[in-house]
Amino acid sequence: MPDNLLYPYGKPVISGLLKSLPEDFKVTENLGFHPHGKGEHLFLWIEKSRLTTHELIERVAMDFSVKPRDIGYSGLKDKIAVTRQWLSLYLPGKMTKLEIPDISEYKLLSHAWHPKKLRPGTHRSNNFEVMVRNVETLPKTSLQQLDFIRSQGMANYFGQQRFGRRDDNVEKALQAFNSHRRARKLSRRKKSLYVSALRSYLFNCVLNSRIEQGYWRKPVPGDVFMLSGSRSIFYQSVNDALLERYTQMDISSTISLYGIGSRLLQQDALKLEDQIMDEYGEIRRCLIQQKAKLQMRATRVAVEGLELNHDAVNRTLLIKARLTRGSYFTSFLDHFIDTENSRVCDSKT
Image 1 (tube, rainbow, N blue to C red):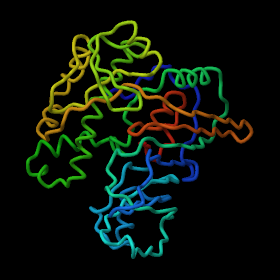
Image 2 (cartoon, one colour; image 1 turned 180 degrees about the horizontal axis):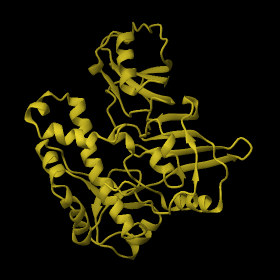
Image 3 (cartoon, helix red, strand yellow; image 1 turned 180 degrees about the vertical axis):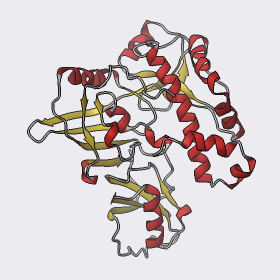
Image 4 (tube, rainbow, N blue to C red; image 1 turned 30 degrees about the vertical axis):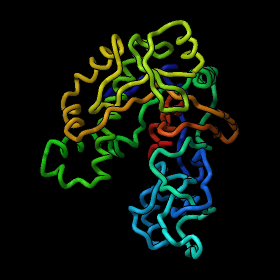
């Protein structure tokens, strides 16, 4: 994967400091539905800071005397941040005699019962309120880049979280999967992490190539399309009506998350993707060996409710935005501001 990924609206001309304090990075998960009020799964609405989601699950399991595997979550949230998210606890027979334990390491904001366990990717979106510090100015170039993002969306790159703090998850995955002994010892969670890293790497390479070749504002013949705000995909020949829907952000082109399955791409889109993926035969072999299932991911995603407030005196930039699940806030930032030297961890919604 290129060291410096290409972004569709040019390089950032400003820089800033991200996550100097946990309070500078606030994330609120939006489920898109309300718990029913009845069932065997207790949904917990939790605020946390300085805990990963998996660390939070371990603490909740201890507090409520349940096993971690009986706790469900929808999205992974940052450690160096103030985040609000839902967890679900499987507590059959406890609806009428629930006792809430004393809690110290996180805040329990509310709770409600629901008939189903919370699964990864269930939530609809996340709201972000982020303070970037040491931002001297907000020049015309940056404002133009932000206007493009509002009208044409952001490149849906996977963020650094997928590749590890030391950017070595792909290397570790290949080493593990190429050794039958090491592969057998991998936990289910670690195996899933490594498969995700390999697929994300290939996706980012293809998306970078599409942007480099100018396939951003228009689709490629043979593309498979995804409806905005949905995971529904379809194939259709490019015509004027489809181009209008593309311009209006109603649909976007997709790229394969490599794995086992029938590929729907055709013509130029398939050639473009194969041209990149053929360079990474070892990654593809590992994904097939691990029986990863083919999926599709949109090349771009809308940034909703985007608001900015630049304080020139205090040199701060307050950003508010809403992103659909599966996209990364720091990938959004990379379109117009350089925060590379200040990152503590990445943010997936």
